[in-house]
Image 1 (cartoon, each protein chain N blue to C red):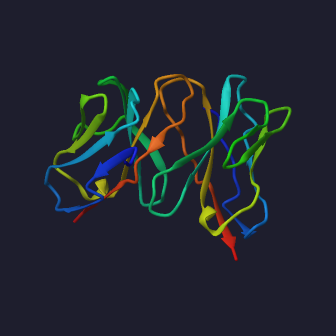
Image 2: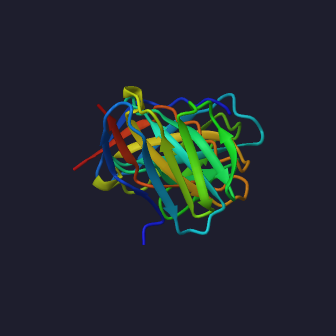
Image 3: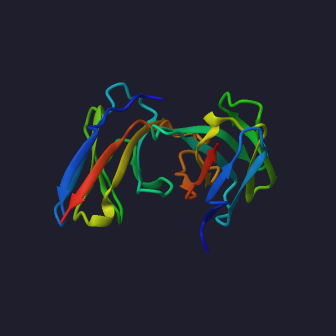
Length: 113
Length: 111
């Protein structure tokens, strides 16, 4: 009964491919996020969705497209993968109330070869 | 959001209190102090947050100085499982969920 779950945990693929990472939360939260942790371990927000609507897009390349079919799911689709996309991607969720803490998943390690 | 400064690493003996400092001298009046930690190969985990009063929960205590320019996270009885990177984050109490992570403090709890 994991609160925020991501699949797959590991993803190895070649440059130029298209891949998706799925995220689901069973906490009843209204807001979901994608964060990226690069090789230097810096965590940075990519997207934020509230009730299926995009509210933050942190200048992420157009190759990254989040999709929220319902408020419990936020998937991340990446087109034309590049070497620099290799990172750990974390999904998170929170209630919509101001200042609520985020609950993170355990990440998807993407390796582009 | 205000910037925070933390020591890159600290050691603590198992069973002793771990005191992790954070400087946030440019904090604004409406900004909260949040602490998260990241255990190896896991997602960040929320620990505690506060505005100006000291806070305590089942995981830790947060001591914020009167001028709010610094704070200390206290793990009262550190265990080996508390070994992690601890992040101090200052943010407005809005609903964007945008957290700006720095490099954090790597806490090593030793037996």
